[in-house]
Amino acid sequence: MVKYILFTAIATFIFIILSIILKLIDNNIIYSLIKRIISEFREYSNILILIMTILIFYKFKTITIKSKFISKIITIISPSVFSIYLIHQSINIRDTMWLKMGIMQYADSWFMLPYILIMIAMVFIICLCIDLIRRVSYYGIKKIPIITKILEKINEKLYKINSKINNYIAD
Image (cartoon, rainbow, N blue to C red; front, top):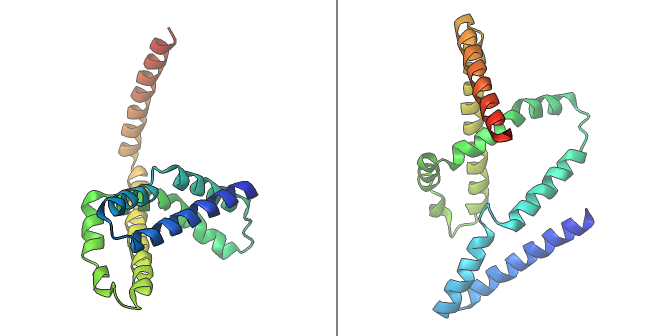
């Protein structure tokens, strides 16, 4: 585990060094090359991001929460995390959300970091509310008997199709 944390720290240090070099170089060819390399480090599909994500997952896996209140909050929020990610990364929402928040107004101000942190918290809370409404409405609709029967029939048909596909693949 320590090796992975050390690897992540080294990768982060390299990213910081490359960022500093990017600021110092004026040559357009080298500038564009370094800028492309750094932008590749920030992509979600980058191996370093994957490694950091796995390390964070394992760290959270080892944490035990003794407070019942915090445990209850985590129990409510955790099923929504993937939905929050999908909502805020939607092309239609992401551009509107980040461009119209006015973050660039504070680009040269001391207030930029607190403003960004407040905006991130607001986006998280808004997306969480959207997903909680979705979850409540889904479970409310699911309790209607006719809907339950329709969903059961759909599940049976999907199961039959899946069985046929598996049998075809096995043969």
